[in-house]
View (cartoon, rainbow, N blue to C red):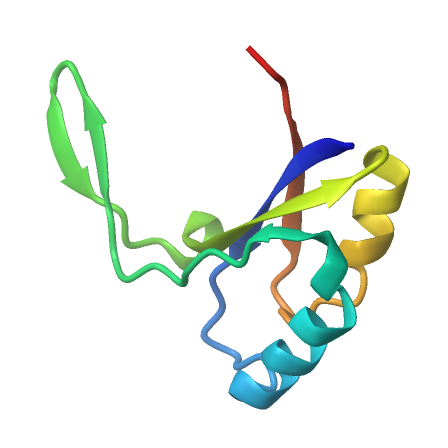
Length: 95
């Protein structure tokens, strides 16, 4: 089984609330490796300094770690997510 990182885009439009999220997590329960957490703010750090991340267009709202056999299966799981702003799906490459 492979691991996939679901990164939730932040939204100021709402996403159905906690009940919708818990229903979705319950539906995909066997695939969850780490339910993750929502994020609150953030900083972009580079060798030249640190700046606050504020733009909604690229703000990350949280993450989960999911087990799935392949990208197709991971995307299918992500399609049920209540996050209206979208989910970025990345395969975690074993090292």
